Image (tube, rainbow, N blue to C red):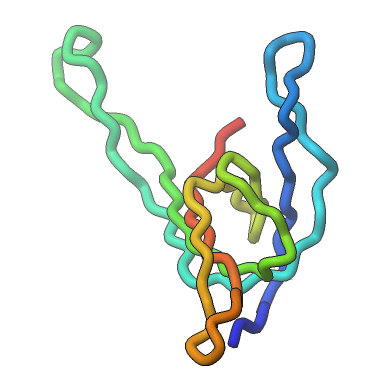
Length: 116
């Protein structure tokens, strides 16, 4: 049985674009959720070899997260969530069913860092 333990701000991506070709976002909605995993980490990103003789790298914050939410929210790939100061983009939505009865119990969301 799914029980939310915190809240996140969910921003749904609309189907249309503005005059500059950017996606239009709906108003943020306070959504109850459960955090399964929130893993921020520093990752070394390679720098092009022609730009640096030392073959150095730059550090970048990379966040992977898994959230559970109630199935009444129509979350889609590309929607945004903000939780604990992290801005995340939905990369996968998976339906999870209850063991007994087979009814839809919750949605499992996989998210990654969003830097816009």
